[in-house]
Image 1 (tube, rainbow, N blue to C red):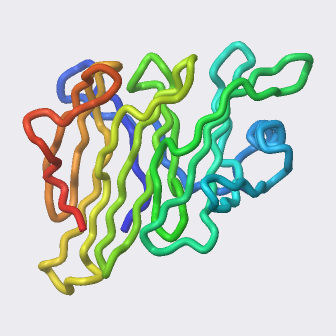
Image 2 (cartoon, one colour; image 1 turned 90 degrees about the horizontal axis):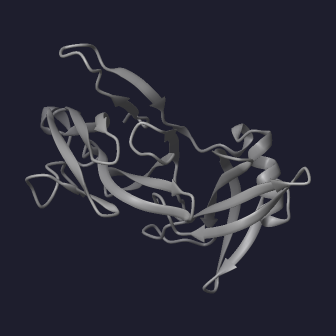
Length: 236
């Protein structure tokens, strides 16, 4: 099953081809970049990986990316893998805000538990950043898992406000039951955000054995599906 997504904004002219904005990539500490590693060292006091205990559980954190917020400020995104996790247990994402003063980064805020989670102790497995959905930078993260041959992928949109990050939307972007149903009756569906009116709405296009679109509209600090209580996307 394809494990990436494209974020795009609809072009102004009717009928014009949509252009991709962000390819969602794998979470890989080796590809996090120098700024992310510098910010991770400032946030966790260690280079490369750090162990953190929360609520009696131990997580192994590693950097994912550092997102520029302007004015010398950055948002560090890290993932924490839960040790000795059971199948349904999620890992833990962390977002730290840091500011550069005197040539060094220092932490100005920290938040745990935002973004997408996964199974077997994993947190987000795919990520991307876009400025097409909001006045704020938006972290796009994917997670999910497989249960008895059924695989689901969920995306979370996290706005990086000046005062701190906020999860504003959770949308299904992947489904496959090919591990439990063989042959042409199996379903395999993928979704991606293909159009947006910043701070107001966005549209998700689904393709595969099902082909449809769904629109989410902003209400306060969250987006809600328009016209339905639940997505048409199947689940496990």
